[in-house]
Length: 147
Image (cartoon, rainbow, N blue to C red; front, top):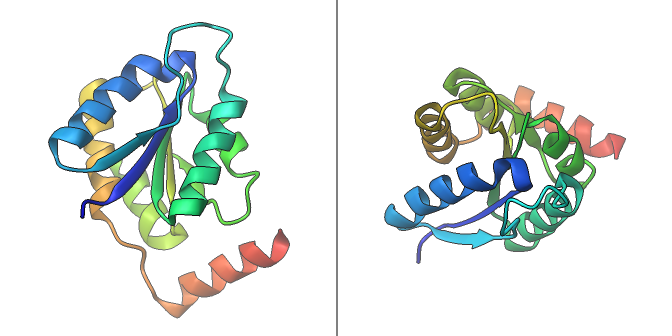
């Protein structure tokens, strides 16, 4: 069975979401799309952040969410206990977010990064495992205790 990846975006991230989704499906991932389904500017990021977070938690999976800057969706997803959303702009940040911060949601800014860079970042997100060094595990426990 292929790994389940939850993906979502607001209107600003819709087109990039569709490209990422297509790439993931070609690679054999089981992609669950929580919307948006159009370029309608009324499709703001909060409900898609909530849907994605709930699906990631229920499926014990990872997620990718996109808005114009990546900031709005990162705020929205991090409202949910157990979600570690990381707004990243390059592969190095993605690897650090996965390894040291155990990020389970990658937050992207469609207006800030190219499609090619985005696909490299998604690849790094999916190929990098969290580091189980006790130092990093202790930090994650500290974060969980704050919520």
